[in-house]
Length: 221
Image 1 (cartoon, one colour):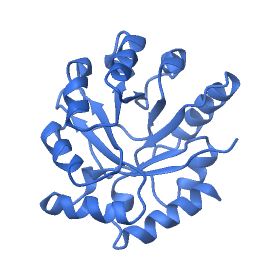
Image 2 (image 1 turned 120 degrees about the vertical axis):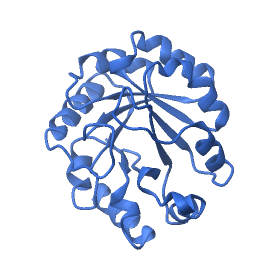
Image 3 (image 1 turned 180 degrees about the vertical axis):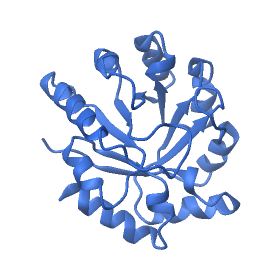
């Protein structure tokens, strides 16, 4: 099956002292979207960026803004994030009791809806709700901190989810977040992912255009 491959730099690894320049650089380098890791210090053991930063970035880029809400009670914040400029919202299966309702609420705001799953969570519930969503996000590290190594077992989870989606004829994007680098993106793509979030794998490289180009070549090989 032909897939639309997308590279999504995660600004969690960007230089926040010059964030505007970092966003412009990855946009010029060929990034497909900008990934926001939003953490509340409760669902994950860390705090990160929120609505004011997303709103500021919205003013300087045309790229889609992909907000990954690693927070408790995400339903309270859907509208503020979309109003600030988010084009897609990812909420976690671990904190959402009614997945179809959350997806409907996101769609009613005019944004794409995604459901995220942590490494230790069985994918059954995500797959059951898949028809309501536009994308599934598989965490390939334990959420909360950038710079972690890719969990190898994530490949089997990606294969299982992609196979189930294909069997049912569901053309969802399958995003993977955590430890994605140029040297492993090919096997991750072969496992079924088509949207690749990379933080230090991009922002840790001196030439953003070169590394994004290499990652795209590896993913599509």
